[in-house]
Length: 152
Image (tube, rainbow, N blue to C red; front, side, top):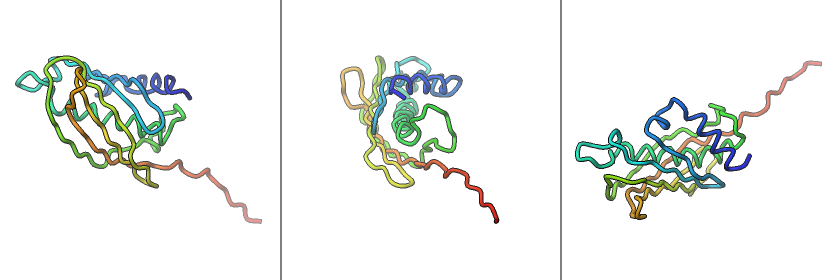
């Protein structure tokens, strides 16, 4: 499956979820990486009119998950048993914005037998660093093919 086909599938899977409701757009995916964008809108603001920290963190986590999903299950089939679940997040919020588009860029920095570690940087429209996130995600392996024993 090509990255473009994968992104179309991901957009379809996102319908009716939080991903769609706040407006994350996945813009690229490939081996060990992914990128997504999020446009400012008042529904994503905190009381001072800037992006809510939760919106920034959600964008970063969704982008980390996109990169990990390509790694754990690039088949284009939504298989819950192969979905990379976030186990831990560590976030540094560095600055904020009150307009424009945020871009999250995820890079897998460790692929273990059962976990992935993904670093994500979030930038504003001027490429100023908004946040850095490290996500540890469960990296399930495909279950073994069912085998049947036959007594002879």
